[in-house]
Image (tube, rainbow over all chains, first blue to last red; front, side, top):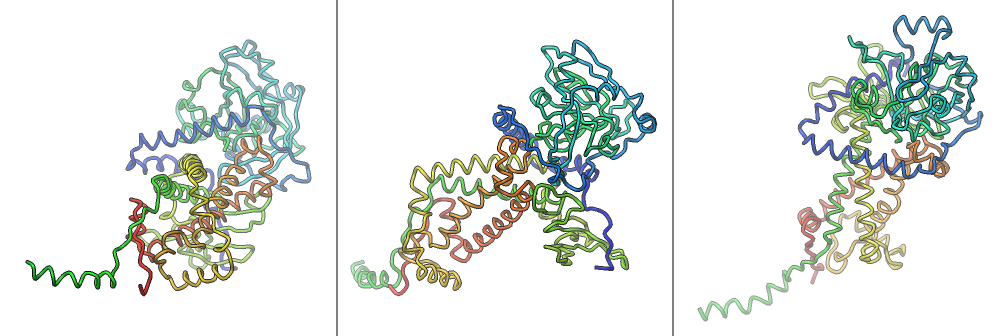
Length: 258
Length: 291
């Protein structure tokens, strides 16, 4: 074994991204229309079955400090590129503002200190990556429901869209930034928080500083990092690829409770 | 005319004694045949998409958490020989390393070029993570729906009671040993014994239907954060999310083992007859030897 050095892992998140589009092309031999319908049937069944199962809005299991994993691998972007984020980093997010807009009666623009002054929730929960690994971390943040109630949702509001500061793909129209969305069912859940503390310390850059989403009943890529704008909307079709998220626009499921 | 008839008649009983009339029985109902072939297709889809998913994080752990850096029970990696720059496939089981280049970790493509990947490309679903998740979950739903149809059928028609559950006499050690000896000699069942499943066959089917497949579904559900929010008991049942993932993988291997043995048995005990009975329902019972 001494002759051999461990280089890199066989497949990571970026490798997943690279093979994603070509994967769909490779299956053009099959009747794509029918295949897509069967696959969509699976997604629809999962969404409805799980919503039925979760109709009482149970909490996910919370762990003790002794049960936490010794480490917590970062998911996705580990440091956003670009000077705008770099300025935030070196100023410790002093000029950072979180915008809450869209279908709200009172749009918000909040500093990090103002967010930290709001009611907070601390939870030790398990993070599930769709690649198969899991880690247990401790998060403190403002319940999303509190933010949305402060902004006062309009009756037609249905989706909460998280716009992020990490640019995944360079495009002329700046549409390559990470974004994610959830519906009100998950947005109003008590354990859905915008976290600014991780494992007792300020949220590290690798984990989405200054604000990241914890949406505990869904898998890793739904947990948007580097959030600077929350848009409340009644549909997703007008944003970027129209499927409700950066990965969703590239073939991933919008509902990721499994 | 008259003379030829008289020559045939005396021969007829003698021919019957050597080769008696073959007996055709109706062995498999439409429900069993239909659910069997749907299930066969689903299992293939689940296996190739499951291996595609496994390749994204080819390591298994015990407990709730597990990621790169946590000691694993089982892992497959592509390393590099620093002398030759050649990739080396290494499979690690409970801390013991095995070089598995060509099979696990590193495989060769049609041009003979080494390709890194836990399970080889020819065995896994093409495409990426999103497609593999879609296929795996859609196939899992079909498995559950097809399985429920089969279970309802089996319960209400008495299929399980009559054909699958071994009798007390069959479970006696003497009978079990005789049946094992029949299997070792690859002996085909004849006469009355061929009219029903043998005891090892019954036990294999009962274990697959009532133990292995339900465990696959339940360990699969334990990996869903939404399901465990509603049913956290699943964590306690399997010892944590990563334990459930490990059990899911091990039981998948047992199912693959079952399918391989099942196919070999179907071939050595009369492939044509078995395939016909699983497609049309009709099965030829071989006469007893020496009669």
